[in-house]
Image (cartoon, rainbow, N blue to C red; front, side, top):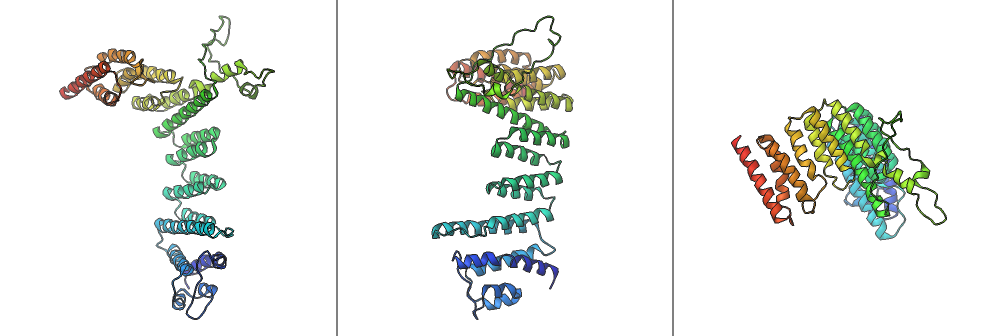
Length: 420
């Protein structure tokens, strides 16, 4: 026999105890042969001979045949990644059917779950085609679906070791740490390690900042649910003789600050709440540090600054939003004041964080309108204005006079674009 056939038979023989379990517990129907041969006889016989003995294609026989076909194909020279995927998908469907029957029959689950077999197939796939990132992602998705978290960590380690320059894998790892384990520290670790290998990836920088903004939004929402939100008081000015007056003060938070011991009246330590509200996690210091580092890395790329602004402005409920966006606009104006990307961010800034139907929006839009006049003849800015205002114009519940002003601004911008 060829080496491929030997390997196929070896892997098939390993499934004999599982198939016997299926037969004994009647999860799948029993194999019936023309001469009464037992199931193990068919597995130990040559492949061509096996087909002669089987006369009724019952369920277990069909499983044997399907696995045999897949194993011979996978161990042949011309095996493709899609062959492994199809085999894994077949085993997933088979395991789903097994679980349903075990539940319906009211018996104890068989000792052999399909999970281990599917992991083995996907592991073989990633070892043979380690350059196929799609296979790694499918492997990760299945392990995550099965809540095999140790397995996920192991797969991620192997995948990132083999593909350190793949941005999507670093993003997957960071998102997984947050979504499945709520571990922001580990998620930051993945992002920072990814940036060492993919320093030139704007996508990774933007997603890192977005991750931090999502984290701030969750903290703010939790504070509001607990009733701990309150306006942040402005810090007292530094004394003239303070040697560190020109340094940014970062308060240190201890466990006692976050979870202070309750007094006799069960009250909350107000000092701890004030310190917590002024931590870098809530004041936007981390996203700003990411932005500054990225802008330095990309040599003050105005397009990146615009993308960062558009990403951050979506978090309209953050108390620190104006601080973040104001810093972005200031940096862009200092480095590229004549860029259309800088100018449109400068124009939109007064309305940041406001809903178009809110009472504060008309006043803010008047400030933006005054800024539009400064750059009314720039067709590139006009295109950005149209893209910004058209969705606002179609929003339901907009004040009639405001809608007229928006429509007139759009028409003027369209005229400038046509004349260019």
